[in-house]
Image (tube, rainbow, N blue to C red; front, top):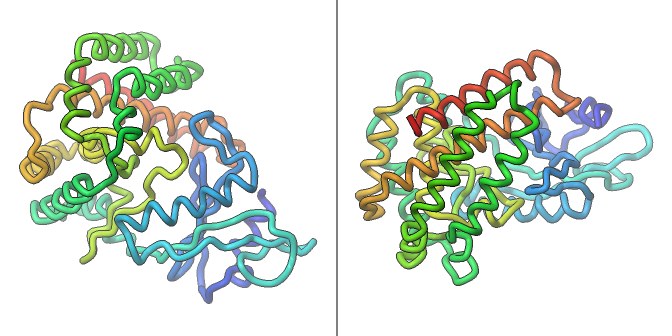
Amino acid sequence: MSSMIDDLLNPEFLPDKTEMVSLIQTHISIVFLADGFVYKIKKPVNFGFLDFSTLKKRHYYCHQEIILNRRLSKDIYIDVLPILYDGQNYRMGIGEGRIVEYAVKMKRLPDEMLMKSVFFRGELKGEHLKKVAQVLARFHQKASNSMNINKFGEPEIFKINTDENFAQIQKYIGTTIQKRDFNTLKQWTENFYHSNRPLFMNRIKSKKIRDCHGDLHMEHICLTENLPIFDCIEFNNRFRYTDTIADIAFLLMDLEYFEGNSLSENLWDFYKKIANEHDVNSLLAFYKIYRAIVRGKVNSFQLDDENIGMEKKKEAIEISRKYFRLAKSYIE
């Protein structure tokens, strides 16, 4: 893997002319940033909820990524490119050799216009939030709904997600989460299911369970004219087939993680008026807690990635702890 990364950081081995190439790694992806394009390779990992363990699966999910993301960013996702090895070098989409990997090719969006960048500059305004709310509300209203999708709104089915979270977080107790906080979050979640089944079932009757985005945070929204929203969940339907409140809750939680609470409130006010949402505060809190726990878990996974250095792992520990503290704060 390291020799492939080294080769693909060389502009000669990429399909498009570029002066510079930089690298970002997550727990599931290797991302090459070139001047005009981004190339994303899926890591050969299996976390249970995500299985990229074979080349065939990675190829399939590359195509799924393009199909699903074109719903909210039509012109950004371009193609799936083969990565070839000729016995000496790895090349992307050019030359000859054996296909060893695949990459999703995307247009590069301006980093400075990502919602997170605009937020950190202190320039995120009500007009931005209103536009985001309009785009998301329209998307949620038009997103697919069916008998099969509705099942994922049932508390017994959604509980698979939360049970999985707590099972996978357990190994990080004492590192990224304290045992008492783990127990508090787990017990609160169990109690919520027991007390609120009618609330979940009413959301199904109201056709609020849709084929959503699934990973809706500020890094995935670009505040340019067409407002592309990208990098949705392609690898597991049960993370995308969800309550529309669970989708918007991710973005609200993300703003609150970075202490943008008033902006989160404004976004929610815009969204709930457009989407005609009423009396869902307890459900919104439930999904915010769920989303914060997911982010804490995902960042904890970086501790097990041998391709990530110690400094990055220390950073992941601090980020995870902050997400778990945020989850607990919603209960308090």
